[in-house]
Image 1 (cartoon, rainbow, N blue to C red):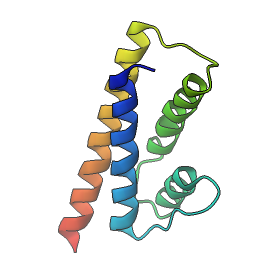
Image 2 (cartoon, rainbow, N blue to C red; image 1 turned 90 degrees about the vertical axis):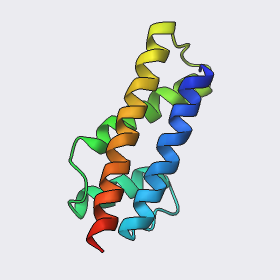
Image 3 (spheres, one colour; image 1 turned 45 degrees about the vertical axis):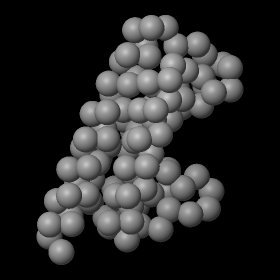
Image 4 (cartoon, rainbow, N blue to C red; image 1 turned 120 degrees about the vertical axis):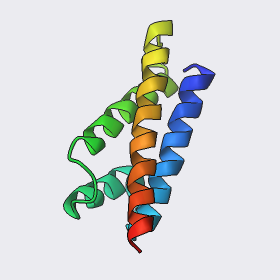
Length: 101
């Protein structure tokens, strides 16, 4: 995985955990990211499309990390772009929820 793709994933993950904290989601045990996204959906905090999009990136990241797939240059650019878009969405949600408090 390219450095920019990996960095994009790490930034997205950190932002999602910040969003979980802002909402009061406890994403521990098992797969914390999956559990946290599921709880956001159940609470109707995030659009239903957020979790599947994040999961798709997570699956690809894991495949690359375990040597099951090598990203092409264009895939790496698309991955980084998608991760950044999802990060911006998560930041917007977090900011909106913080403003409501």
